[in-house]
Length: 316
Image 1: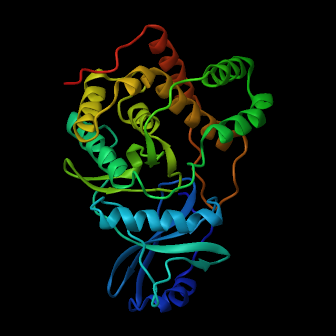
Image 2: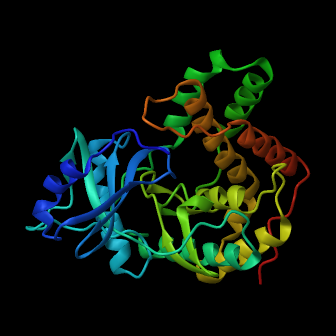
């Protein structure tokens, strides 16, 4: 369970008073997630999710809350921040910034079928369109973060991983064409999507969102939703994902040409974040640390795909 900061029922009861939601009925830590402390909260008047922000930059929190409120009002199934009396969305609990959100329905899918991949592709395109012009800072895991994190990690890595990282950094530094951009989710993994059968019930965890390249966001999704345990891409799932996305927001010719590079950039970003979690873990009550080598395999596979000039997809 990833709960960095525990919360007692007595503490939460006091914190909830400005929300006018009636008596607290239950409080339960949520196992998923590695960035924040999350809890299911039931009161007399509804079911919610409480988030204590552990690693998010405090100055970015108003943007994230406003973004989710904007997306929710535009039909995107994401957590809507619940205001306290007077309209305040953000508070503090146990020394951490904290917010209360609507609780969405459904469950994550571990082994997605074609229909799940298509639904995620369509939902991601709708998210990109709904927030294309929403004022946003750059997403926090962009090129500057990649360079800084790699510099910290390189001395800690075995020689083969260090060589791979150095070579990929050099490749990603090469100049490339500008791509369409806007607000991206930047972390839409399988555990951040809830399904009710084959229909999406919720998109979760917007705390890496910000302005970025739409194709990079799509590559993040493809690397998780369409990858086998070996790291190889599953062609039918990839086709379902990309065709559904393209139907909502057409993928341009420039984006198609940049696809192999973006698959590699997305794999590099998550390999680095998991290497950082592994070598420099944060203290916590129950902290999930994921195996970084899974994304090392994905990165190596994407490099091989680029070298073999794999076609992007079949677009009408």
